[in-house]
Length: 215
Image 1 (cartoon, rainbow, N blue to C red):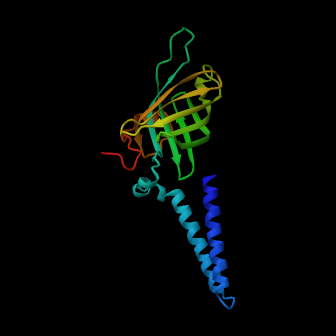
Image 2 (image 1 turned 180 degrees about the vertical axis):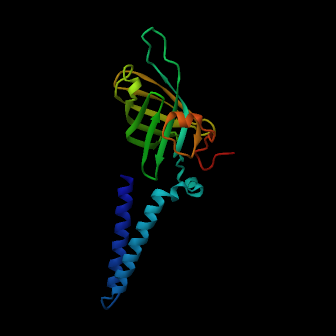
């Protein structure tokens, strides 16, 4: 909705500028049209550049406050699932991959047994100023794990720590009536396609998602 309002505003400004340029010229010169076309092209290029790249710049994010989450996060998942013998399932090492632009975000979560991909995700700022990443997901177990777990859907939510090293912490719920907690405290700018490759990598470090973070 916010992006639509911005586009409408830009369109109105350009239209008013064109009308004024035509009214102030005694003859219908192609110059205003050329200027209008150039202005529209420039706005489009800048909008695309901002959507993909410029929003990541620290100077820009100091004004917007938006956290930079893109990359791979490493941590663990704690689940409410109980084994057949009545013992709880230990915490599961996991990797969370985030793809982010100025207005969109998508999430993939990898464990040794399954892959979860977001069907809808959003980055929101709460009334208290904290940022929250929420997503709906579909979980697809690997063939070796399908006897223990079937394909299911769920919702997850993580809050983004304000102090370097706090990372992403939150919880999830599934349509199987299971739930749990997630915690990701290490981050890498690289993209890893599996839990095993991310967990074995050596380039992870405490995350600093905010432009003004110390350290």
